[in-house]
Length: 197
Image (cartoon, rainbow, N blue to C red; front, side, top):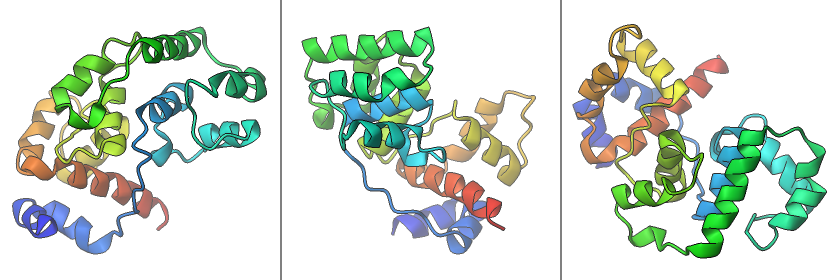
C-alpha cells in the first residue's frame, strides 16, 4: 500500500522503486550507540561504507556501545585513532547527558526527540534526523541537510542546487506525506545501486 501510494504520488520515484532493491534495515533501536557512530564516523553506521565504527567496536570486543562499556571502548579502540577535539567534546557531552537523563525515546514525538537531542552540545539537525529515521524508524523524516540526499534529488528531479535547494526539495517531498522516510531510503539506495553499474 505504501509503495503504491509513493509510486502514484511521485512518478520519478516509482521508476526507482521498480528498478532498485531496497537494502533491509535492522535498527538497533539504541540511541546512545547510534549517536556515537554519528559522532565518531560522521555517518550513521547503517550507511557507512568505511565501517570505521564497526571496526573500532570489534577491536574493543564490544557489540553494542553503552555508557557502561564506553571506558573499555575508549582505552581499547578509540585511543588508537586520531579524533578531533570537537568530536571528543561531543562524546563527553553525550556521556554526561546519559548520566543525567534516560529519555523514553519511543514515546516521544519527533519534535520532542529533536529538542531532547538538542540539549547535547555538538548534536545538530542532521544527526537528529539520522536518529529519527534509522534508529527510531519514524516514517515521516526528510534529512534536508544530508549531502547525499541533496545530491540525488538534484540528479533525479533536475533541481537547481544554486537556487534555494531546500525549498525546491520540499515541493517534491510534500507529495510523499507520511511516507517520506521510505522515499528517502529509496533515493539513497538508488545512489549506491547506480554506483555498481
